[in-house]
Length: 167
Image (tube, rainbow, N blue to C red):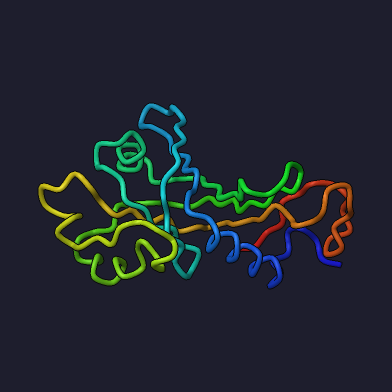
């Protein structure tokens, strides 16, 4: 058995499947004055535990990121039955993708065609446009360890809900 603090490939695969199978993340930011704020955003996962989304530059969370880049986020599967929670949790930093990096990052947003979302061009995200592409990079990432309700976790030997480290 491994401890929940030890990353495990099975959990990384579980996290990737959750990210690939969901379209929205809940983004937590903090204002310059220290007030917390959460908001749902349509996102696209990127390799290296990065998360991309587009927001208006004057949205509350965008203004918060300009002052304080630290973020928390959660992606959860709201389609599973009660008590079958599946979630990815992360903390890290997020910033607007600078114009000189858009050509590298933009092909990954909005993700594969089946995910939905509209393809964007550089012109949609620069100059007088109110929209910008943002990127969060996780420094720590966990999953709600997958298990059936009232069943123990075979990987960790724990019989309650718990987070397990992926990154």
